[in-house]
Length: 111
Image (cartoon, rainbow, N blue to C red; front, side, top):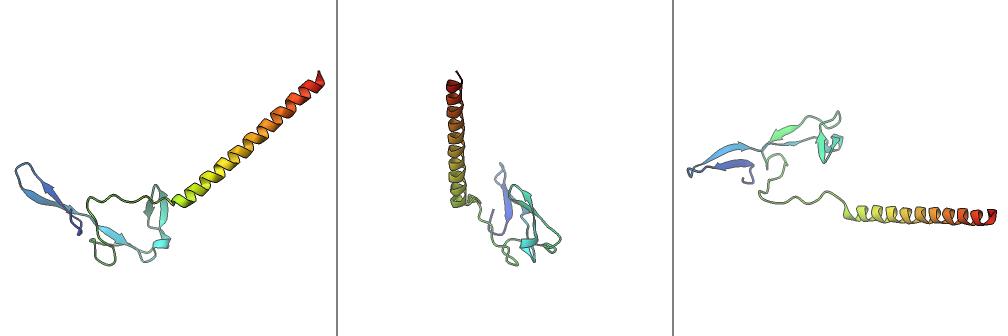
């Protein structure tokens, strides 16, 4: 596949043929797209109508064949969340341990 999105098929008889072309869409207001989950979006009331075109036209960008897409996760934000969860877990376990020790002392006093 080339930067223009044309998909070529290579066959066992040595021939190559065009199988199709990838189409891309742009929107007048990309912020109006509705998130559908799993990094998928659909057009919304505020996104405007899609302009469907070939790669490289009307600001759609180009396609890079064989490239691996980078993650769309903000690692800094995820590390901050992980530290927060870890701190919360530690605090919760200390509360449980303290409550257990208090109950043990009450049991000793009650005897």
